[in-house]
Every structure is written in structure tokens, then in C-alpha cells.
Image (tube, rainbow, N blue to C red):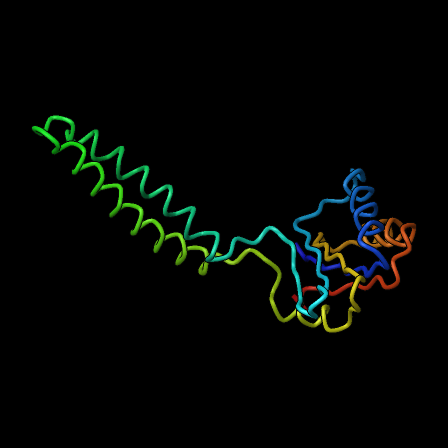
Length: 169
């Protein structure tokens, strides 16, 4: 199924959020993913989307790895060791599991990139002014979808509404 990316630039963040809320109520439009691109006060590009970065994947993997290793040590019988053996075995397993989990989580987050391509978000950001956010919406390629989205966005004073198709994504 062909997909397209619709980009709308709004004069303010509040108008963008109102437009996004209206689009969510439209039952005929299936949004695959969305992101907000803006420029902060320092001139840096800020992208808010559903992508998981390596910085987020590492800690998630660390917690999961540590928990699974501790549970594994308990199930393998670490609690039957004499003296402080159970505490040492479970602690060592937890630390090793956390280290391996952090590395695995970071690596997996780098491999599984679900966000919009960086060159597209950078290109859109280069056309923005401070305080003027853009909304990126990926949906199936359909003229009726585009018309409905354009109408919703223009109702909330979107300055620019354009569509990028498969070859641009």
C-alpha cells in the first residue's frame, strides 16, 4: 500500500495541538505515525515522535536484563546456597544481566529505527522559524485523506500543507 507524508506548518504550538486533536477524531483517516518538528530558542531542531533512541533503549534493556537475571538466579536455585551465597549470587547475576541488557537495548534501539528519516525532519526544520512548529503525519496515499487533513489543518491556520509521497520517504 502506498503511503504519503503530509507536512503542515502552524503559526503556534497551540494551533498545532488543536489541529492534531481534530484529526484524531476523524474516523476516515488512519494515521500510521506522526511527529512534531520545531526549532527551540537555541536554534536546535527538536523532533517529538514515537521513535526509541539508543539513550532510551539502553536503560530499558538494563532494567529488563537485571530483572530477568535475578529471577533466573532464583529459579536456578541460588536461594539454596549456604550463608550469604544467595545474596552474592543474585546480586552478581543482576549486575551481569543489567550490563548485558543495557548493551542489547542500546544495540537493538539503533537497529530498529521507527522514526521519520532524519534528512526529512532536518529539511523541514530548515524551513521553520522559531515558534513555528510543523506536524508530520504519515497516512495511506489517498486524495480524500489529503483533502480531509488539509481542511482540518487549514481550519487551524496552517500556513503550509504539502504532501511527500513514497519516493520522498
